[in-house]
Image (cartoon, rainbow, N blue to C red; front, side, top):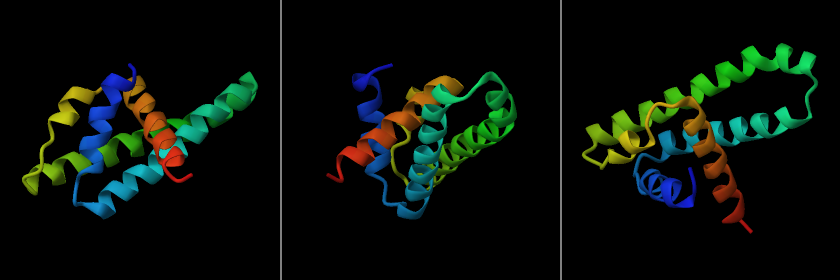
Length: 108
């Protein structure tokens, strides 16, 4: 997955008028990206202790994304991005990291 894959998906999410749901997803994406990046510095024991919490956060992130897509669909907004993103947990996690990076960069 790369910029060419994630950028159109991010732009579709960014375009929604459902600000509260979008912001909720963005906040979870940032939390997940931090958790995932910190994984680099954890010992095996720390990873084992943290794994359930990380999985719960990942599940909440995916739920938030699905809720956003469902509500965008109800509002008549395009949701093809959700099909394109797919259901692979790793890809969705990568997307969260991408979103987090973009949100950080655009605030400079």
